[in-house]
Amino acid sequence: MDIFEKLLKNFGPLGQYADDADGYYMFPRLEGPISNRMMFNGKERLVWSLNNYLGLANHPEVRKVDAEAAAQYGLAYPMGARMLSGQTAEHMKLEQGLADFVGQEAAYLYNFGYQGIVSTIDALVDRHDVIVFDAEIHASLMDGKRLHLGQSFKFRHNDMEDAERMIKKAQEVVAKTGGGILVITEGVYGMTGEAGNVGGLAELKKKYDFRLMVDDAHGVGVMGPNGRGIGEHFGCEDAIDLHIGTFAKSFALIGGFVAGKKEIIRYLRFNMRSQIYAKSLPMPLVIGAQKRLQMMKDHPELREHLWEIVHAIQNGFREGGFNIGKTNTCVTPVFLNGSVAEATQLTYDVREVYNIFCSIVTYPVIPKGMIILRIIPTAVHTMEDVEYTLKVFNTVKAKLDSGEYAKMGIKSMTA
Ligand SMILES: Cc1ncc(COP(=O)(O)O)c(C=O)c1O
Image (cartoon, rainbow, N blue to C red; front, side):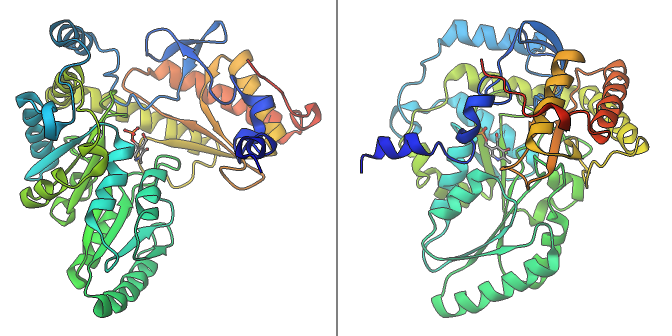
C-alpha cells in the first residue's frame, strides 16, 4: 500500500476534525502585538490563551534588548552546533544565571524544550535502568520515555501511594539488572493547572534510591516566592536532581534548559543528541533570555500582579459554581459538560459575540462529554478583564445548561 494513500484515508486523532476546525478552533491566527487584546478573525478580542505569564513577550525593555541584539549579531550567529562551532561566552553566562536562579550548580541550554527533554531522558538511561513516571506527563517526556529500551512503570497522576508501589517494582527490576531508577514528573501540569506532587516525591526520596527529574515548563518564573520554580514553591529544591525549564512560557522566547549537579550537566553536554547534532541557539535569543531572567529577578511586581489576577479569576469561578478542578497554579481550566458539537457552538459564541479568545479542549484530547475552556492569566491582564470574563462565562454556561447550544449542531468553521 502507498503510505501517502493510507494517510489520506485517516487524518489521525486530531486531523479528522480538520474540515470543520482548521483555521478557527485549530490553528487559529492571533494577530497584532502580544497582549491581553489581540486581533482574531478581523476583530479585537480579549485573549486568555498565551503562556506569557509575566507579560514579558512585549515588554518595552525586553523588546529593546531583543532588537539591539538582533541588530548587533543578526539571527545566524553563532553558526553550527555548540560542540563544533556554536559556543559563545554569552551562552555560558546564561547557563550559569539559569542554574543560580533555580538553585542548581550548572545548566545547559536546549534549542527547543521538546527536543531537549527527549534527549535528556535518552542520554540518562540505558536498558538496565527503569523509568517511573506520572501518568499525565507532557508529550515531550513521553517521547523521551518511548526511546528507553529498559522497563518503565507509570503511576496514577500525583498519587504517591501508587508512585511508591511503582518505585518498589522498579527496585526489584534494578536489583537484577544492576541499573538505576529515574522518576519523572512535571512541576505544573499545563492542562489542569495542578502542581506536580514534587513534595511527595521528595519525601519518597528519603526512603528509596532514585533520581528525580522535574519538567517545570510552567513553573519557572511563576511558582515560588521568587519565581524560582516548583522546588522553591514546595521548599524541596535539594530533592530535584534535574530541573528543566523551557523559554516557551514565562520567558516568552524559544529554547529551554536543564539544570543539575555540575558533573551530570557535563555528561549531558556531551551526550544529548538533539543538542549535539543541531545548531546552537542564535545570539539574540541568548541575550534576550538573559534580559528576561534579569527582569524576573528585578521586577517581582510582575509576578505579584499575575497572582492577583489568578486569585481574582479563580475565586470568581469558584464562587460562581464553576468546576475549575484541582488547579493550585496560574493555569485555570473551566470544566463544562457537553458534546463536541456544543463545544464548537459555545466557543463560537464566546469568540464572536463576546470577543473573548481562550483555548478549548474537547474529545479526543479529553474524554467524551467533557469540555475544557482553558484560561491563562498573565501580568498584562486587568481586573476589568477578569470581571468581564466571569460575566460572560456565567452567560454561556447558562446557555449550555439550558440546551441552547445542543439545538444548533456542530459549528463548522474553517479558514
Ligand atoms: C510541560 C511542557 N514541557 C515541555 C514543553 C515543550 O517546550 P518547548 O515549547 O520549549 O519545546 C511544553 C510546551 O511548550 C510543556 O508544556
